[in-house]
Image 1 (cartoon, one colour):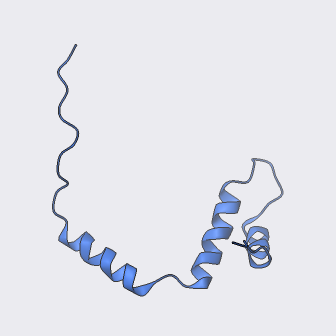
Image 2: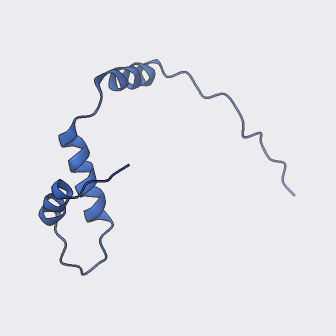
Image 3: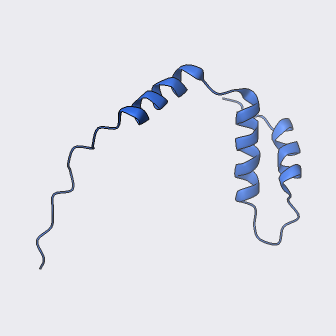
Length: 68
């Protein structure tokens, strides 16, 4: 059996990525962005051959609310 390399190594430094992540966390997410992501998720997971369109998913995402 082949010898395996250790898989738990430290991730390389990525200062630009860290800066962008920090900036994004501070900015937050708008309600419009969340609605668009919701519509995109529904459209992307619709079965092949369904009559669901991106616009119909967008319309439905405005009326459907999750209750916690």
